[in-house]
Image 1 (cartoon, rainbow, N blue to C red):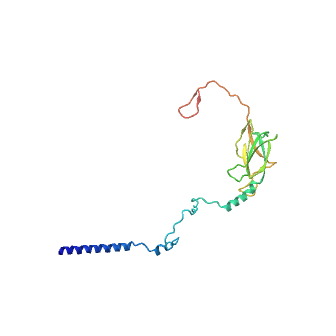
Image 2: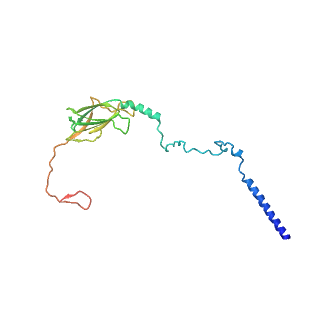
Image 3: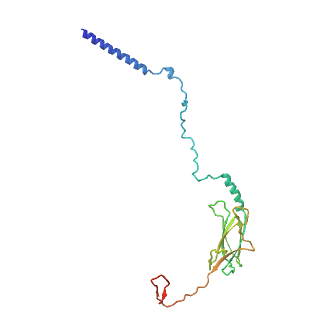
Length: 226
């Protein structure tokens, strides 16, 4: 009888402990009251102090700096250069020339090609054209620009390269001096630029000789006739 009473008391004590634990758990997970649940929330919560502010991905990217050693173009300097260059490109240009042969004899009807620099775009060409020499070998080119290059040629004549003070069959002249307001090297009507062509002479027949045996010594030298 006593054992039954002890067992019943132990059982009742276990039930009591279980009930207490269940009550404590229900208190911890108790849902918020309706007043707290229905309280209005602020749309944007202020970040805590000293917290890093995230940057938006949609913001415009920062401009990258130019590579080392490469300077960004200065708009003011470029404008100043173009303002100084424009009058030179529009400067009136009159070029006098004369075509002669190796004996200083005028060469008429020679073809004269020229190219004048008068375009501010370095990737584009300026004014190009072609004219011819008159009966006394003279020609004149008129236009506008700061420099000119001339080439002359004619069928039956060799072109001559420039040597010493002679222009040969081509040459260039400038209408400026380091972008300064000076005239440099332009020929005049009374002192034209001379362009030289060498006339192709009559062919000379070759001299034929009989067979000749040549022998070269072992040492380096000229061959000797035998």
